[in-house]
Length: 216
Image (tube, rainbow, N blue to C red; front, side):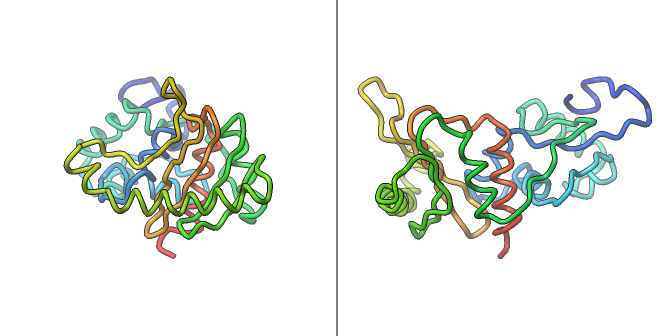
């Protein structure tokens, strides 16, 4: 279900909730550049419980008047950044050492690893202990490479990218590196083979990291 103006709401007294979609979670965390949509997505992802949709709350969260807030909501729903649903997904919580391995496992068919920018592995699936340490260290180097050439990539080449990959002869990713930015913290999600960032666990992963690290 999208924005209220685009689809019927059913019962008049039905309570709808904001539901951030994978594309919205990706947009919220691929950059730290100030942005109205990014700011709203971060607020929703940082909530400990599902956030109910109310026009007055939407205006407060966006700092816009009624028409401006509705236009922004329509735009974000069109982009598949979020939707309004009567039954939202439960907000994942628990110790990081327990929830992170569970959340990253469905994001790739093969090996998956989540590392911080210092090269410390936070969770992994499929890597041997030796591979885990080495790949986490490689992630830190990739992060430095990305930061060193950020101006070239974004300003001169206008690619606006932050993800890297080792590709095979037909251009498919053998090992991909996806940056997750949470305030001043940055993480790398390393996935062997086909990534599945279009799944709910990716939304839950960004939410867990945002609630733990944003403004900490």
